[in-house]
Image 1 (cartoon, each protein chain N blue to C red):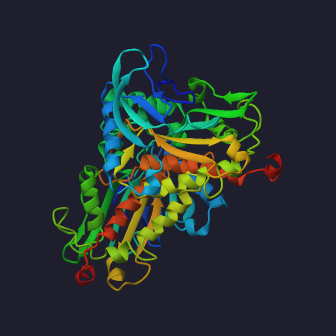
Image 2: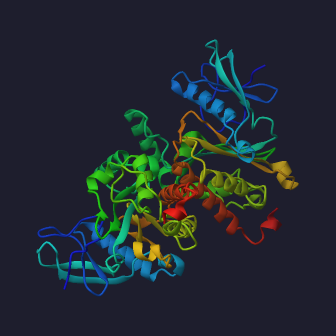
Image 3: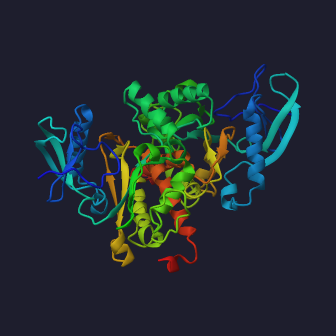
Length: 288
Length: 288
C-alpha cells in the first residue's frame, strides 16, 4: 500500500533501514515526524495554518493540503510511528520536472541553540544562501523517454556557485537539460514555465505581495518547490507550472514583524527568473 | 571655519582628542577617512556612484552630494588628514528631528574577516537587527524651545526591544516626544511626516522599487536617515520630510544579485511605518 516516492529531490529519503516519507495510491504523502521537536513543530504549523482565518485563499493554495497525522509502519522498518498526512503534490504528475529552492540567506531562527545556529551559519556561508538569499537543494529535470531525468546528487547541487544557480534555473526550463550544466541552456520552455499570467514568476509575485504584509509566520529553512510537466508545456496547456511551499519544521511566530529574511531571498529568486525571461533569445519560439 | 556638527545622532563624534566629522558654513560635511580600508572604500563608493550612469536621478537624490576629498585639520588635533567632502544634509535645518536606522539583519558582508563577522553577528543578535531587519542607531526629536531635543544615549538606543522600536518610530512623529518612551505617543505629525505623496513612506517605497531591481551595490551597515523640521510640518509645507542613505564604508559589488539583505530590512521598516499610518487615532487631526 505504501511506496517510496519516486520524485523526491531534497530532504531525507526513505529506503530499507532509513526513515523517510511514503506515499499511497490516493494522493497522500506521509512524512514521518522527526523525533526531536521538529516533527511536533511542523504539526503545530499545519494546525495553525488550518485554523488561521487571516490567510487568504489565493495564498492557502501555495501550501500542500493537510489531513492530520496518522500512525503508519515507518519506512525504516522500526514499526508504526506518527506521520504527517499531506497532499502528494508531485507523484500524481507524469514526468515532473521539480526544483527545491530553500529560501532565505539565514536558515536559523534567533532563538535556536548556539550549536544549531553555528551549523546552519556554516552551511549558509558554504552554499549560495548567503550571497544569493536562497540555495537550490535539489532538482530533477525531465528530458525524454530516452534520456530520462537529470537528477544530480545532493552534494553536487549544494556545491553550486552563483553562476551554476543561474545556469541551473535556465536549464530547468530548457529542452536540452540532460547534458548537465556544461551546454548552453536553450530556455525553450522558459516563456511557458516561468512567464505568462499563470507561470512561476506570476505565482512568486503573488507570494511576495503576501510576504510584504504577513507578520504571522517566519519561515526558516523552508523551500519553494517549482514543478511542471513537459507534455502540457509542449501543448501550452494551463496551468503548466506549479509553485508550492514545503518544509515547516522551523517556522516560528512572526510577532508582528514581516519575514524579511524569506522576503529578501524570494525577491532575489524573482530577480533571477525575471532576468531569464528578459534575456530570452529572439528565436525562442523557433526552438520550441 | 570648521565646526563640530550639532545634530549628529549616530557614528563617531568629533571632540577635543577624538576624530569625527566637521562642517563648515557653506553646507559641507567633512568626514575623516578612517585609517583602515573603510575610508578608501567609502571614497571608492562615492566615485563609483558619481560615474555610474545606470542610477536614475530620482534615486540619486537619496545620496548626499559628493564633492571629492580634501585635506583639512582633523578634529582630534592630529594635523591635516584626508576627509570626504559631502553635502551637509542636517545642519542647515532649523531644529531637525533626525533618526538613523541601520538597515539589514546582517551588517557583515560575506568576504569580511572572521573576526569582523563574529563581532557584527554578535551585535546584530544583541540588537533588533536580527529580529526586525534593522536597528535604530540614534535619533533626536525636537520638542519645543523649552524642552529642546530628546536625544538619548547611543547605548540606550542600541538596547531597544522590538516594542521600543515601535514606540520610538511613533514618538518620532509625535508632539509629546520629550517625555521619552514612557508616555503614549500622540502621532500628531505622522500623517504629514510619514504619510502623503512626499512623506517618508512614499520615499521609502521609491527606494524599495529600486532595491528590487538594482544589482550594482550591496549596502552593508548602511543607514536610512529620516529627517523633518517641526515648523514646516505645522504649516504643512512641502517637502516636510527627507530620507537619505548614509555610511558607505561597507558597500560591496552586487555582482548581478539584488541586495536581499538591505531590501528585506527596508521592507520591514516600511511595514512598521505603514502600521503607524494605518492605526492613527481618529482624532489625530484634532491633536494637531
